[in-house]
Length: 122
Length: 108
Image 1 (cartoon, rainbow over the protein chains, first blue to last red):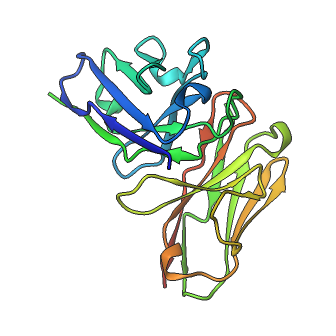
Image 2 (cartoon, rainbow over the protein chains, first blue to last red):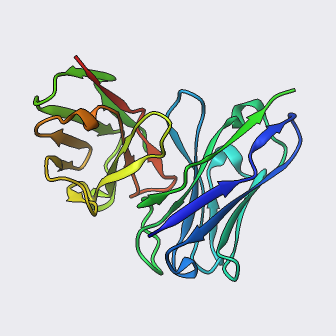
């Protein structure tokens, strides 16, 4: 079955960097677009970024543009989120999520990881 | 950016009752590209509905979605104990992808 396991979260000071990973298994990772979605404590969901199945296309939310970079390594079935210049408002659980149709980017999410908590605080 | 407004914020109902959740968009978007998710405390969201009315794999038929244009509805025909949770709508017809603020369905 589809499994997504995030890692790399933790406590980081404002202005510093952090890299999140999402290890995928149970499906052909290289065939699916992938997303990062975040959820601030006690708040709703916010889409962060998407990458196409082959890594050729990437889009970010305006709130993270210029600071966060999504990438993937299809040889290792792993999705990444490089987060630079972190701010207090980036504090959230970060989920990786799969786009549902192989080779086509739909924009909704049929499988989610359990999330990794990022806390930005001095 | 399309803003999704969900109502009510909280719905207090008893098991066996019908739940009707609303999601209204600030502007219409492509082809009913709307999804619904369920989230329980401490868990990741789970896809319930996509394309406004299509149930995702393994979702019971007591869950149904409807609507088009700017007004969408998630209906739970008879609430089971495991259905008490927070529900989010999400549009994928326009960039950026956006979510509603959520409706909490709680036990009355």
